[in-house]
Length: 181
Image (tube, rainbow, N blue to C red):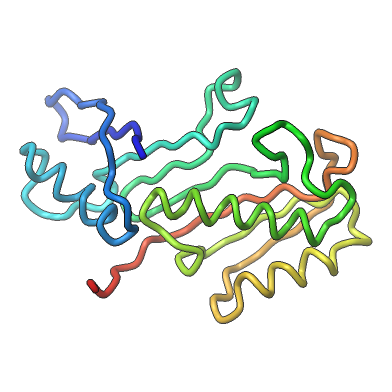
């Protein structure tokens, strides 16, 4: 996996903006970002907010709208609104709130993994539902995914971009230190 990584430096220094290949496991990726910066003289101690990682999720509006699917700044990870549109452009399970919610959380889990985070790091979810009468199906899927994690959560009704699209989800996460295997 490659990503654009920027290093914030003290005033008077030039910021670097480069493309690198990140390690495969979340633990390796998390420590790699800090080590990479240290090795290049961008600091001698871990400084929260020093690393800025931007990932694309391949969404059709990302390039046109000039936005990222995921942004990691230090230990904070932000995932933009994610829907159940498959890579082919087809909507997954039109009209099925539960199936779309599970599909979206699976997409988000893969993105978090690429950024060195997991669903256990999620601290906030925001859901936009096209039909509040289906909120129970969203809540059921959310409860299954986040059993024992309990992020703060908000769900509101909103008009979504495709007929049959039932849910769009954003998450915020804070990467916590992990035991090394």
